[in-house]
Image 1: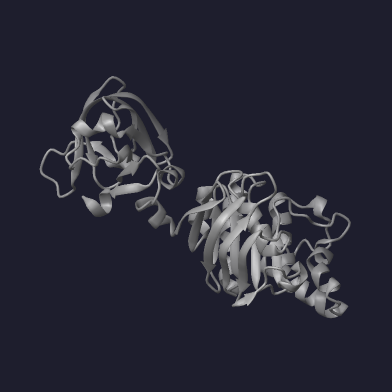
Image 2: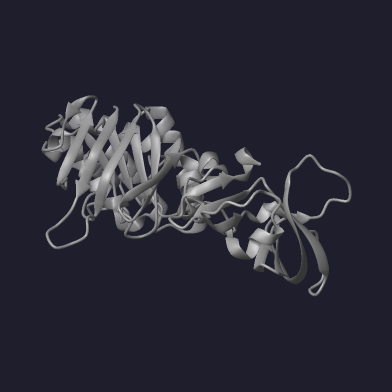
Length: 350
């Protein structure tokens, strides 16, 4: 099912708008992540799609049909919540079959369907247990099966991984992706964790302050952010930010009068190459290593520079106090204006 939001606004009397002029199209069969900090409007948007809230302005269409005022029960939606929301007194089988019971599907058929979806999510060996006897990951699998058993045209996932430990999170993240590909159901996945969004989604919608900041693939958001917010929010480690006035005397590019901030990815801070390189160099700095930390495969190096403290992930092992000559590559560097808009992208403009 194709989902289209046109100029959606949600506001309450005497309060700032929760969502402002949102425009978004989700293609049939697409998995889209809604990513943003707490309070950005992600869950509110999901509730609008589910029909639990009605927008103050704008239209919402499913496959070209206006459903803005439509009752939630008519929208053909499956929803999975952060806290699983399983019925504690019902078995796994009965929990999965419950939507079919409400739809008056006959008992043999609904039990057969429930067993099928239990097998899809790998809880078919838990069918007689109550939710309290299951792990968090198993409970979330049951919740997924219950949402899918109705054959929804649209699946809404509200922070489904946030209550799981790291190992279960990775396992269920991959499971959601597998199930979505298997069923082909159009899916919106709410998360505040960029790793979840980057690993699972076809496209990511970055929300902040009730507005869409940018829509794209994980690579597009990382390599070509439209705003400083997106550049800082997407990527680990966090973007290095330097006032443009501080950096300008060192830069090899012509001055940009509207520039206010230079953003530098950690991999754009390298040692000055010994020979000529085809990689455009934005600036060179003398720096001193203050600390190195190894995190998995990455070595993070904190550096004291004329631009303040910067962090690099490209430097080899070296002791604190070691002086180094740094090159700032154009690739992975950005300039932002006072409003936070990207006005120079080193990947494209160097």
